[in-house]
Each structure stands twice: as C-alpha cells, then as structure tokens.
Amino acid sequence: MKRIAFGFMFLLIQVISHLPFRVMYWLSDVFYFLCYHVVGYRRKVVASNLASSFPDKSKEELKAIEKEFYAWFCDILLESIKAFNMTQAQLDERVVFDNIEEMEQHVNNGHSVFIDMAHTGPWEWVPTIYHKYFSHIVGAELYRHVSNPYLDDFFLKARQRFGTMVIPKDKAIRPLAQLHKDGKIFGLGLLADQTPSRGNLHFWTDFLHHDTPFLQGPERLAKMFKSAVIYLDMYRVERGYYHCRIFTITPDASKEEDGMVTKKYANLLEETIQRNPALWFWTHRRWKYDHQQILQEQQSKKA
Image 1 (cartoon, rainbow, N blue to C red):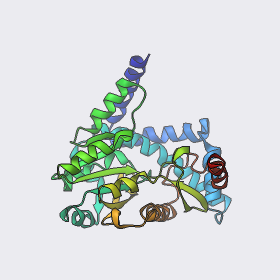
Image 2: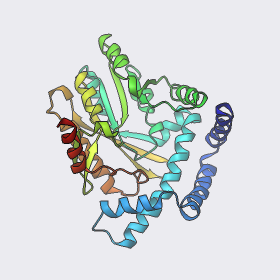
Image 3: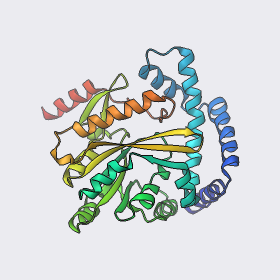
Image 4: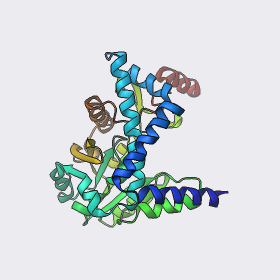
C-alpha cells in the first residue's frame, strides 16, 4: 500500500512540477475554489485565529484577509511542489535576496549562520541562496522524515539536488558538530514558527495578542556552535515572485542572554505578519496550549 501511495503521489508531483507557471496558477485558482468554497478546509480555525490576532479589524476586513490567505495558501502548496523541477535560473529569477551583505559579513568573520525563517513563502525555493552567493560554505536544512519510506527517499533526493545537506530534525547535533569540528562554515535553514511539542513548552512571549510558546531549539543550537542568527523576511512581490530581506538577530548567539534570540525572532515575525496578514499559515492551531494550565501541570509534576 505504501508503494502504491508513493506511485500516486510521485505521479501527481511530476505532473504539477512540470506545468508552466501560468497553467499551475490556473490550477491553484481551481484548488482555491474547492478548498475555500466547497470543502471549507479548516475555515473555523482560520477565522478564529484571525479574529483573536487582529481584534481591531472589522468583520469585513477579516473576511477579506481570510479569502486572500486561502488563495495564497493554494499558491504556496503548488509553488513548493514546483520547486522539485525548477531550474537554478528559474529560482534565481523568482527569488531575490536583499541585504545579502549581512550574511556575507558573518561568514567572512568565520561564523556559521542559522537562517530563521517562517511559513511566509515557498521555503523550498530558499536554498538557492547557497548556490547563488555561498557556494563556498555548506548549505544545510533540517528535515522531518515522512512515514512512507518511498516518499521519504524521494523528498530527500529532491532537496539534495542542488547540493544542500539534509539533516534529520531529531539527529541534528552530531552532523553539525562534525562540520564545526572540521572547521567548516555552514548555513542552516530553519522554519522556527512551528508550535513546540507539549514537552518543549519552555519559552513563552506575547505574539499577536496571545501568550505564545516558541521553539527554543534553534537558539540553543546556535549558542552551541557560536553561530550568527539571521531572520529571513520572505514576502511576495507579485504572484510567483518573492523577496527575502535579511536581518541580523545576533552575530554570535553564545554571547546573548537566554531567550533573547527567540524573542527577537518572534518580534520580527510579528512585524512580517502585520505588514501582510494573509501571508502566513493560519490553518494550524498555533494557540492550542494555555500557559497557566501548563505551569500548573509542571508544578504538580514537581510536587
């Protein structure tokens, strides 16, 4: 059954990834109609998230953001699939990096760089930064295995086709430590806006009018390797074209107080979302944990 499922998914990926952009976006419009108007995929979750994050906006404004989000959501899913067969020239044309000198400075100073990103654009397009500007360092990204071994192998090879080092998320320390030991500078891309698991609710901060937990693993890894940390502000200029602005969070995470790197990342991400509220993944239950309840549970366990 897993082989059959892979065969179906492989065929779907191949068809979509070979479509011309114009046809792909026409298909995205069809998916938007089905997703939003017919299926209503997670519309209650999206509406609730938007209403609680933007209490000053009217119902009409929230509805407009909701519709724009679903249209972009379908775009980005197909754009991520399209990445598997995009040429380097296509990626270079459609992804522009601003403030690249920020990252160059850290690399020239001998620091590896943690690239903290978010679900605000087609993240599968970002590794082109290594080929275009930093072919002399090791470009890497963390990867979460999928349960289907055939599909897992396909995704791994697809992400490695431009020379990117793909590291399992749960086994990141050893390969990074080896690179560090060998004196190699690396860039590591991280989607840092995911909700922590229940056992990793250690850092909370005010974010979009919510008391919100953030992953602190990226900060701890950066401290471990005395790495610089940058924020990649990815935003859409027009359909199919993105700019990535680079902001330095710290030139050396090991010199920062605990929590500062994560806090600054959260602040920068909030600024990105406030600029264009529709371009973020509102379908996930970002605020499913109650801080006070978690604290009470932790105190009970200690007792």
